[in-house]
Amino acid sequence: MAEHRAVLSLGSNLGDRVATLDAAVRALDAIDGIRVLERSSTWESPSWHPDGEGLSPDYANIVVIVGTVLAADDLLDALHAVEDALGRVREERFGSRTIDIDVVAIGQLVHASDDLIVPHPRAHERQFVLQPWLELDPRASLPGHGPIAELAEYADGDAWRLA
Ligand SMILES: Nc1ncnc2c1ncn2[C@@H]1O[C@H](COP(=O)(O)OP(=O)(O)OP(=O)(O)O)[C@@H](O)[C@H]1O
Ligand SMILES: Nc1nc2c(c(=O)[nH]1)N=C(CO)CN2
Image 1 (cartoon, rainbow, N blue to C red):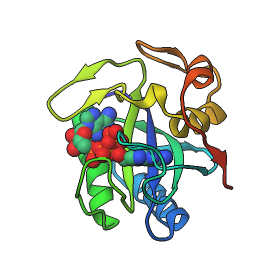
Image 2: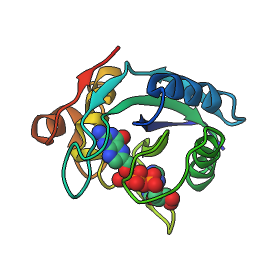
Image 3: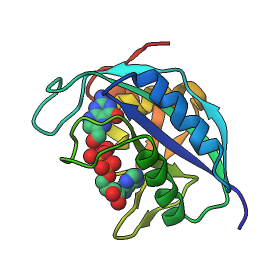
């Protein structure tokens, strides 16, 4: 399969957040079929949860752009393997975690299987995704939602550069 570009969002709000993000980027790059092409700086934001913001420790988030020859569902499996290797425990939905890796977009693909929805259904409203992504690719657009520069003007919440 030809290589395509995928946008990934990585987040951590437990332990040494930046060290975990660094380890996740290295682990992604080490996978056969995935190459890390670009990495944003680290952004911090209050934890988002459907019940309210700031109920758990602040997150550190980055966006990474990878080139991959993996099919969408295989890419998700590879991300889960990295999460598992870095000690993620799957507990409650939207709960605290050492590492979370989401597929934000794969080129202009629109895809929905039982396990994977692309674009990510909440990415367009998350500053902790839009701000680091804007840093890497200010002209990017999210299929079905439009230019991320416009989405960032309306998205709720706050995110600030950590490093
Ligand atoms: N674009 C996507 N990226 C990652 N996981 C996805 C995506 N679409 C669907 N999923 C599914 O969502 C399930 C739950 O993922 P996860 O635990 O990361 O959710 P969450 O991080 O709590 O919430 P959110 O997805 O809002 O960040 C995964 O097992 C996966 O099958
Ligand atoms: N700020 C922020 N909040 C979150 C994040 C995240 O990456 N950043 N991930 C979550 C996983 O469901 C839930 N809440």
